Image 1 (cartoon, rainbow, N blue to C red):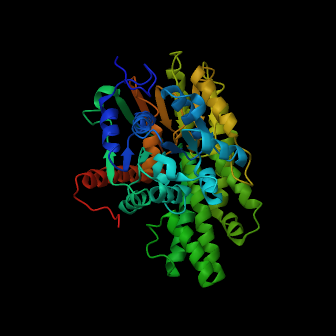
Image 2: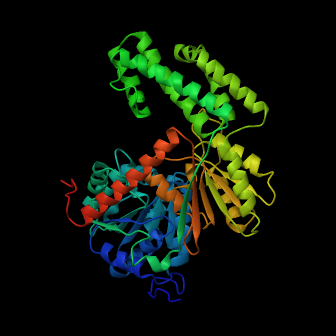
Image 3: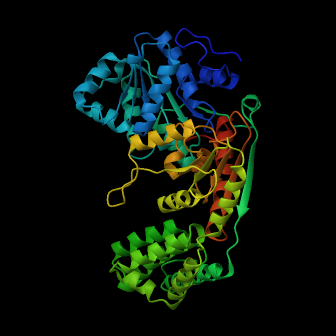
Length: 505
């Protein structure tokens, strides 16, 4: 194995990979958006370019933006490991650090890794002046839209730096040409560099990745409960169609219903219309939980509606179809049935855990489901599962602090646990070790999240991704995610080839 040799790169810390060096050279010339799947070394590329800029412009400092404190601290540790400079010259800047201490860090340190909120705050108070910064790294650059602080920081940096260079990093910018254009405009991007696993320059450094889609079938009674909720949902949509509120009762996205809810309130339409729109949204969520998560989650939501005094909740609970579905679900719960996905997961994990060294990540969209999976797998031989969830919003049950998240990842990496069951917190950027298997317990319609999830395997050894999906909503989500990813690749390839013009002006 050969290693990168550079005065500002510690010996034998970075394996020499042609594709990373090619990207670094291209990105050194102008502001660039680098699109590279999770696990292919975006931080390494940033480190190479940082070393180049520090050696070329010795007066300059480096600002590295990351969206969360755990990511900031992770990047600090990685840069201290790689860069051949005094570790004290590489420092984090987050809201957890006092403002007077931050002022000293800005003054003394050479490489600063910060959350955008803390950096934006210090810019607004005059604590930070970006004139002396010769490079800005933007991690998870797909966030650079709307009012996210990345946007204002990049704008100020581009205007004020004596010699600016922006390196934006993401696994996927999304499948929307307008969003890609907005990211490029907000970050003053002039060059898009994209490589994937199939690129001949990359292929020698990645292992085979096998995809398998597992369609689960409902037991007869379970399927009947699902159909009852689906019928009530469709009846509500037909009612809204009859009122002229929706044009096609067979093709209504949940985002459209939420938009309608705001609209009917603004227009002060009939009270019954407002109630029905709200009921449709709640019925969609009931259907989603029963189809994709399980009976406990569905019944928990029903209990929540019972505690709710709104007319839409009362309307739903008065429905004979809903009452029947709830009755069936309660009977199924008594027999121990949760969801057919869970049985498949238990069988799969039991088989894989015959190999003592196996590591698995299971992704789920819901915290309740994460906890349920951990509890169930804890009783399976050789399984040592642990949960990884976010901090939670106000009014919700408390989640995990950022310190707890880092501790769990360290223990999973060290072998204390062999199954990590995670919500979306485990998708973006966090330093999760390579695993043998990634399981999508539920489907995400987002091409960005799908790419991030599967990047957790097949780096240095062959890996596998299993996608569980149920008939109905998840089947549609699967098609949406696939189409969006295909669309994203087409947009990026044509934009790179100059066949389309990004709206940069």
